Amino acid sequence: MSINTVHILSKPLSYYNALQLEALIAHNDALLLIGDACYDYASYTPLSDKRYMLENCALARAITVNTEFNLINDIEWVELIDNAKKSITW
Image 1: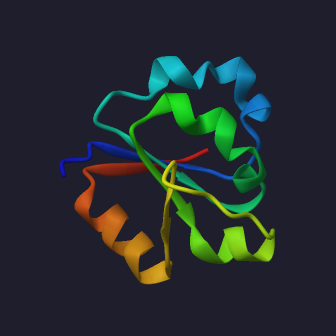
Image 2: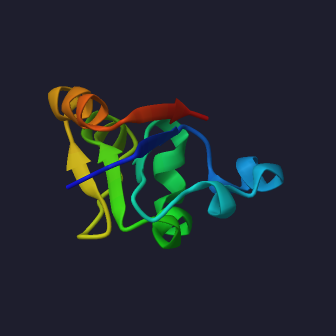
Image 3: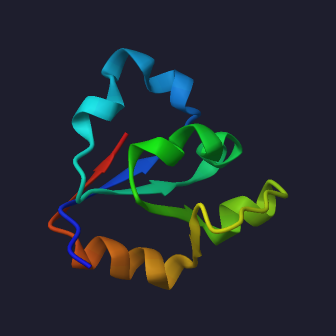
């Protein structure tokens, strides 16, 4: 899996409306939801096929996701960032 950029998002999608994220996220980019962005995971689904959520954040917020997002732990988070060309924290 080739990932150009990992976009790390910590707020609900509506917070980023002025940025027009859909125009900034390329087809080979990945999304990683952390913090309160996890509550709004359904809104992020159309933005990328490579979708991840930090497992600890989902657990802390009592969020269960099906196959829409891959739950990853801290070690997998580091590997995801390490395997991408770059990361952007919004």
